[in-house]
Image (cartoon, rainbow, N blue to C red):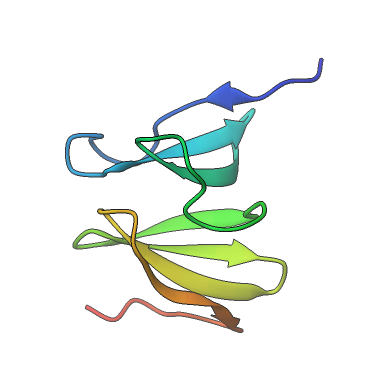
Length: 84
């Protein structure tokens, strides 16, 4: 079966102002409430860092996005650890 499932994961959508598009449990894209891409291309992994921040992986590199859907750092780091 081929398809994409829209799913909200990790926390309340009331706190987060973006959608996470999953392909059967695997995050693939981050979209604003206006359905516009927050991050260009597909993502390979998304991890909740707490305090309203999420790290996302594209290829081998990591970036950070906040609850507002603002990209804090583009995916340019080999690793991002929790910083709170």
